[in-house]
Amino acid sequence: MERSPSTQTLFEQIYERHYQGIYAYFVSRTAEAEVAQDLLQETFLRVWRHRARLHERTDEQQRAWLFAIAHNLLTDYYRHRATRSAAEDEFAQVALASEASRTEMEERLEERELVALLDLAIKRLPEDLRTVLALSVLAEMSSTEISTALGKPAGTIRYQLARARKYLADELQPFIAQSARKGQMR
Amino acid sequence: MTPQLPEPLPPELEEHLTRLLGQWANARRLSAARARSIREAVQEDDVWEQRFWTRMSAMLTPAPAVIEHVPANPWSLALPIEPDLAQLVSQSNTPGFCPYLCLSA
View 1 (cartoon, rainbow over the protein chains, first blue to last red):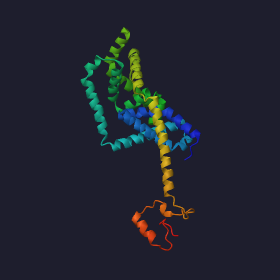
View 2 (cartoon, rainbow over the protein chains, first blue to last red):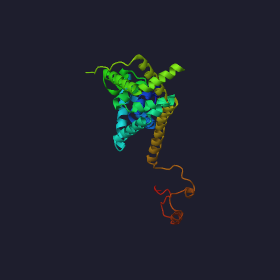
View 3 (cartoon, chains in turn blue, cyan):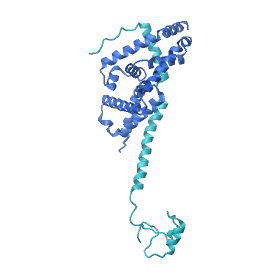
View 4 (spheres, rainbow over the protein chains, first blue to last red):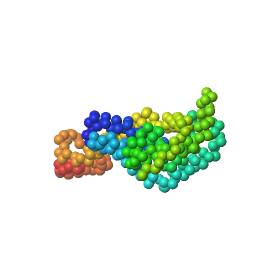
């Protein structure tokens, strides 16, 4: 296969532009950073093997193509796992642990705990909302970009984002209030 | 039809939530160093694969039919046969026998 410098450069540009989005997608769907990194690598390995065709695609087409590859890999990943419910069980167990230790968490609002708390709250979001939120917050993608990536109307994405934020605000309100009070005291 | 957006959050709550999500994102984003190593692994994997297929195709290419430089003492070469068998064959003085086994003299 031809490897002209321009093709390699183009691949690296595409990687830089999209790796955070693809990673966020996998994190939102697997809840495991290591699995997400493996799937990210596999996604771009497929892109690399077809890099000669990168020139043929527009930015939007590249994004849609990348997320289609990611979606297929995710499907394969879950097919290879015993059942999809195994992953959902993990989320549920984490959520239960969260309930049990909520009082304790209220007393500790340092950054690491806040991040862990947000992890739990985000994991409890419905999958669609979790994905949209991760793409928006982790990958800093716009509603239009997420719309292209997931093949959904931009209006639906905006609605899902607003719902996700509302859900999180309700869930985290006591902690946010406490955090705000601490912030004022500093 | 897109459903109506939920009621906007109070500005103060919105601001705190945005700040918390920002902290979360900073902690959970893939680091630039890890991202670079993944990209390099992708490109290395391909290099490894190319080397592998180059070697495989070299191995699968048929050997040339003529050997131009036959050493004076071919038995000095390591042959893939047992030493006893090699000795037996060398003593047989078989006309036309070539120690390269796969070739006729």
